[in-house]
Length: 118
Image (cartoon, rainbow, N blue to C red; front, side, top):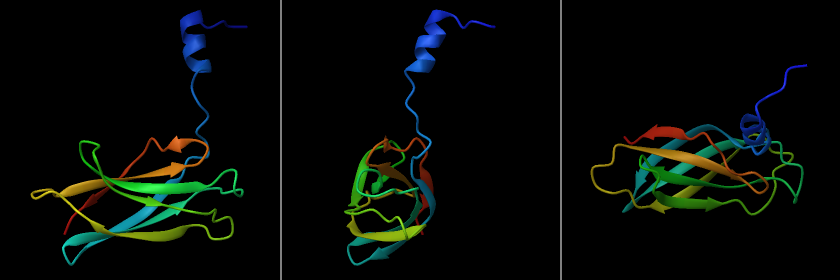
């Protein structure tokens, strides 16, 4: 049996299990009045009130939050699902943003979805 060095073993043991993080399947954006409207389609194996995708956010490419869409309930029987967020203010000169999803249990997902503004 092969043994891992103790520092590597401790590092590996400390990693969270993120198998159930939400996935952004797609997103759209359009200018609407004085702001922007985003629609994001998410999938996540929601199991009920104890474990579900509970939000997504719009970030600039430096990771600064520009808008947050809270999801108030699980979507066990509606997968994937799409929700919108209106009135997002985008700084002048911004050409691309990213969307990141959150799970009630696992927190913010590692992956983001890049979206080019029209």
